[in-house]
Image (tube, rainbow, N blue to C red; front, side, top):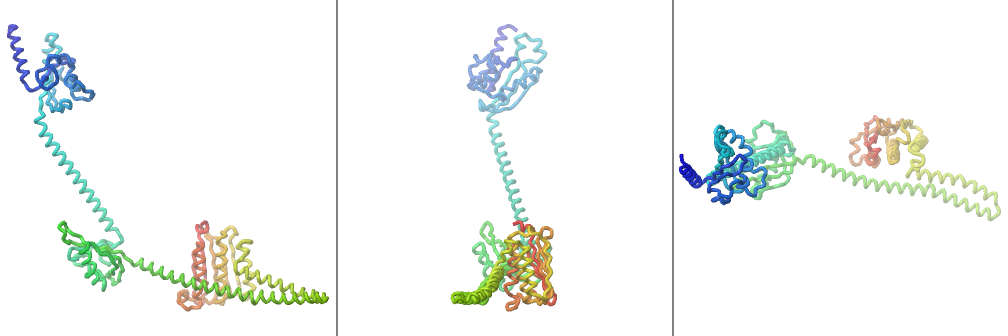
Length: 520
């Protein structure tokens, strides 16, 4: 073939290559452009005559600094394949040209031919073709995005359904485990659900069919009419009703409850059923009754306290008037007489009168000490609980000669905290006073000891005893301030009070102060 023919063939090939819509690049072994077709210029990438010798990546992405750019790495991972004579293909979205490309790289010539080719041809590496498939990919991408959006929506709906199911399961667990009565009915008021607490409250078995029951049938007496004429219609009309009601169990027991009726409507606003929630007020009512009784007892104790204070004031006034007052009047008269004797010169008679007055002074001082001790034994602070109790027992034995008193004080002074000393003394004083007044005992046993860190006081007598239940009635001779004051003193000082008695079997009073109470 002559040179003219070769040149003409080259021109024909160049014309055919320039007519193609694809970008065609001829690269050498160093990745530089040897030749490009006119598509390079049509895409606005530059002049086809000045691009020769430029780096392949740099020519197509002149300002790209991305080390992970697909075009930069295309020849890095594809060069071994091309050198080995194998074709490479890839699809990519070009972020610089904003196009989707189907890229194909063909070896410039097979390996055998390359080794036998002239040196200039051996430098050629590959022919790289960029086929713009953007118009084909955009609809596909839209479908992909649509499918992805639908998939995401399905995932969101599934997650939402799972959340709703989880909330429902939690609500169901709460309703199943709550101690309150929870029931659900249809629009006609027939039961469709009753939780375990409701079944237990009414005595309905766990497997028993409740669909034949109506909510109104669970109520007692007039509460049925209230549910039918007030609770149910009000809930349907306004959404909710709340008030007191009474249920009747299978055993015939009436149960006071606080009831809430909630009406439910469908999407069209039609009434489709109700929920009935009730809380058992039995314990609350018992507590209210106990509180009411406690208030009544407190008022009674307050009245008794005022009465006792008045009686005590009268007693002190009588003691002052009849005892110390008369002694002082007599001593004043004798001293006055002695003064007149001195003035008259009868010194011996005056001295005799003064000597007679001295014992009366001692008696008056003893009476003052007795009254002071009754009001508050100062020896508790000065000498301690053990010395005060020893004095108390001596006084008791002197006063009540016919009663044998045994005592066992198995504690050290340090075992009794100072705040407890007055409480122990007053409880003992009140207990012994009651025994002497009412029990007619032959023997009284008193024990104060420390056991396992707890402080224990016991007062036991062998007297007449009494029925503890009977003294709670008004008008009983033993229903006074004494028993209540002992119980309150024990409670206020952190102790636990217990009394046991029976007719003809004596009485035992025990107070225990736990170690924790003594520490506080």
